[in-house]
Length: 174
Image (cartoon, rainbow, N blue to C red; front, side, top):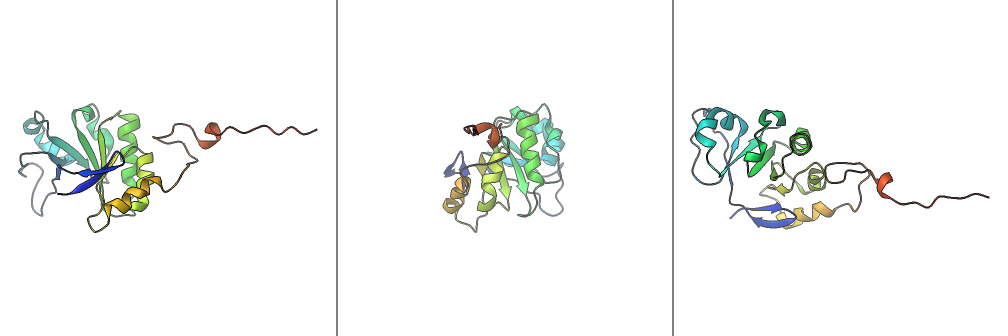
């Protein structure tokens, strides 16, 4: 069984990520029974058939916008963001917007080319679940969440920057 990191623990993954094969269209692809995370375009094309299922999640491609699910996000037990390659950072903005602007509170999962080096930063923008690359050790990747003990900037996980969190004694010169 596949494993993911969720809420800082390695757990079994019982969700399937649906990816379209060459020649398949969002309107015609068959969505299997069970827990399935479908592409946003499939959700949009098959909403009427899928909306009553409680076992449907949706995933965003890196060139899609979180606002496309405005008003619908809380209906999904899981929303994923695909990272097609390590260097593509657009998914960070999607995650931040899902949390900060659209108020999504469920599982927010990073999928695709997800490596240990990214996990600390991904959690800062709102991800709480990570499907790391299968060719990497997931237990080693888990350590990436604690690579740094402090962060300077404000973000989803810490609303105040370091200078507002740190207490410093004032220097008094005579």
